Image (cartoon, rainbow, N blue to C red):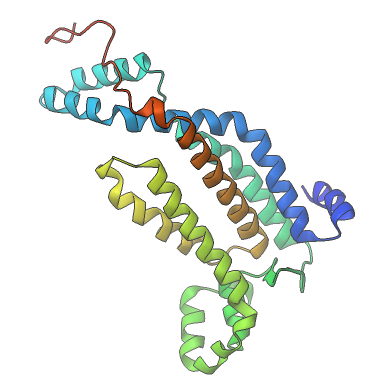
Length: 251
């Protein structure tokens, strides 16, 4: 990972651009898988009325319900677990990039004001003058430091770029959830929980990892919007529940 970033840095002269280039490479490699995932998600939205019908019909027979839903998925070539695959594939990239940014000295390296080695917590701590070991840095410690020296927040330039990047990631996550769960009221709570949970997790991540995540999320949203427009006409057609209507006994 570090060697690849060094090669790209040699051409761009910027570690930030090196991370963005790495993001583009990963997204291009994952494009076929992501495209398949998004197509499957759109088909799931299209099947929601049919799924609800099956749930009502077999509400007292879970075994038959599961069998009929699997038949419905096979009939329409839908994989309910497809949405997890792109994220799982990207996890090693997140881990390697995190290790690179924590093991190598990127102190003072920034891109568009974003401290690549600093998290939102560490930049806020820096603004309010908190000196503490990185292992002890947490939301409680930073919170106490802010209450002890609220005037330090006036040093907004120290933490603004990292904070705006994190806010952008939270918004993009929320927007992706909205695009993915249109017409599915069961996902309403998840639409709010996931962005908030992700934002909380990202508070302590280095700015370089957030830059990768933010650019990747932005590209994912653009891809999802393009695919949604291309399949808008198809989504208007109601799917066939089964080629051969199942008997009431489920046989």
